[in-house]
Length: 333
Image 1 (spheres, rainbow, N blue to C red):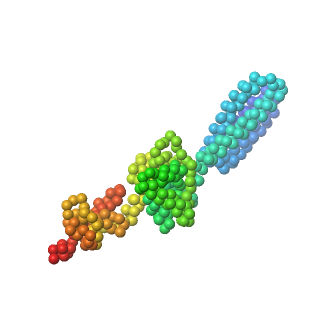
Image 2: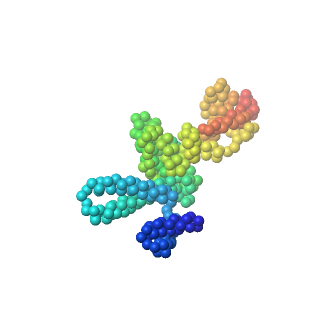
Image 3: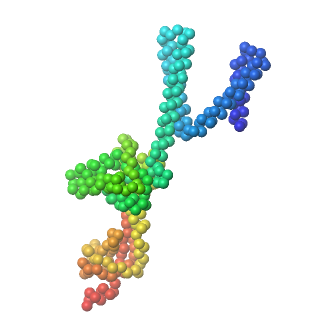
């Protein structure tokens, strides 16, 4: 309210100052008061209109007005050099002034709206933040299984530079790379057509000045305020340094594995020798490696082992164990 009173006073003083040299004081006062009310009305109307625009749209409009003003001054200099009759010149100037300001404000507001929407258009009410897939998590394939059971929903964003990288891998002369690339393309196709609770959004966002795809992903996530889904430990670290959120499927997998405590007994199929003498290696159903001391002689057999320790690393989990005494006695007999 105080601001409106200030605008009223300024408008009244402006109206009085314009009128007083040509009219008496009472008339000038009346005109000044009318100017004051008109000024407050314009301010009030502007506030009402601006409420429907975002701050970025308003800023864009202001920048557009500034660009229009500079363009008008430059155009006025050009018009001044032309042989335009003095009685027509003001009308031509006014027409160009209104045209330039209309163009400047329209373009500025639209660009502001585009900037505002760029961080929202990939976000759904149910899905929360925009989720961007990287190459490794697409090739890995588990993202499709996680999405199929409903733990991930909403739009999943795949930049065109990631698709290009997948195509490059799929066209590789190395058989293993070629299989991995084709697997990634098949996973994308599955996500796009076979899983109803997610949708694949292809975006053309790119950062030509950045060469590595991982760094481009981080730039994109920062720009649209989204998060990256990956199983790449290095990308996880790089994104963390730039305060970009990451969902790491390897970490999710480790968090969901059953808890194993020292002293517990489990049955293990010893499939190969370990690095150390007499060690044997087996695996749990979820792929966790189990190192068994003194199990080399049990190679190819299923034996009971007792857990001695568990090592948790960012890339997975290892279980260390020893052969139970019952197996040793059976072997000796």
